[in-house]
Amino acid sequence: MAQTYQAQIYVTLRPSVLDPAGTAVRSGLAHMGYDNVEQVRIGKYIEVSLTAESEAAAHTQLNRMCDQLLANPVIENYRIEIAQLSAAG
Image (cartoon, rainbow, N blue to C red):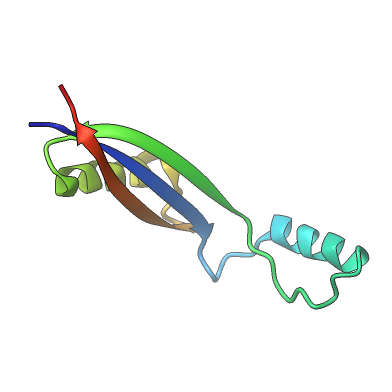
């Protein structure tokens, strides 16, 4: 029986990739008096609800989604957290 899953996907730039948006935010924080902020990295947060036969099947599908659309695997890393919500149908 298919289950409903809720996934949280965190997409971040690889450490070796420059982050101009993060640098701009860090600079803005410094101008506001937050001189103790050493680094800011900007990322994306994505929520996906889906049905699948198992958590493993949902994870496989989410990995494909990330590799094909949600993240750029050349410059970004992603992390998936998944939880079962309920039985579907």
